[in-house]
Image 1 (tube, rainbow, N blue to C red):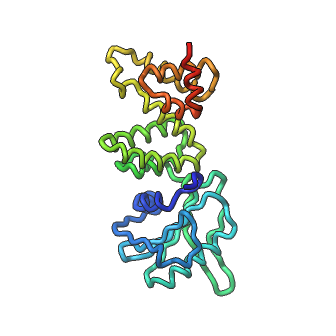
Image 2: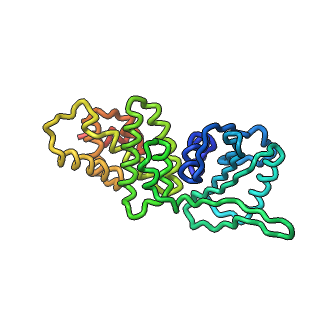
Image 3: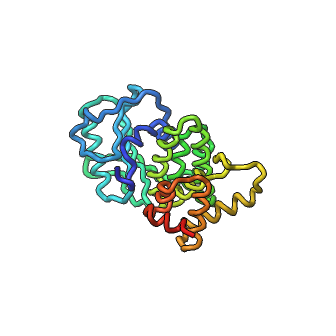
Amino acid sequence: MKKDLISKDIIKELLKDIAKYFLNLEIENITFLDKELSRIEKREADIVANIDNKFVLHIEIQNSNDNKMPKRMLRYYTDILEITDLPIKQYLIYIGKQKANFQTKIVQDKLMYEYDFIDIKNIDCDILLHQNSPEALVLAILCDFKNKNSKDVIKYIIDKLYEYSKEDSNQYRKYFMMLEILSTNRDLKNEVKEIEMLRSVTYQDLPSWEIGFEEGIQEGIQEGIQKGIQKGKFEERKNAIKILYSMGINIDTIAQKFNIKKEEVLNYLKD
């Protein structure tokens, strides 16, 4: 699965929330039309679906500018026309890092064609952060954070996802994987991993936690771990690794968190 694009499976999973929060469409029943549209050129994030037997929804996810987009969308439109008499709603959703620069229509001789365009970065993330939905929280990573600190937003998202999935670790992993993939399009993948790592080693989650520990001590420990991961200086990294090991985190997990070999972890634990 490519990390710089949203996979088709993820879009299918999130389709109702994408339609609701990005397109202002309330939908109930979805029938995907992949097989019927075998002539359409295969792209990872294309979605074509019969919605409530009322219209056909075509969503194209794009993470880079493409001056041929109107022609591509028109080709999709004519292909969809071959298999349905229902109205067709087409949307290009842009999730790229660069400023969007798309033409959305073709006007030529007797032809007049147009599709709808959504730039995710123009949507206020608060709209999704305040929804009672893990899918909405995952999508919030793509939206406009306004003046909010990105780490604060990511921490809020991860904490809320953990709350929603507390009784189901598989569900949490599913949503976290989605969040990690989507975060790549905002250059936030490292922050997502860092905050998840800190959450996963919070003292309160461990059997060795004692109520009498001062909050400042806990925060100091987490800050030390964070510096050890980010800066990579020998003493900071050694201290962070020793803290994690003393907390009962196994060597393989520590190696994975710091992206180093198991032997290197053992060297840090010496003396």
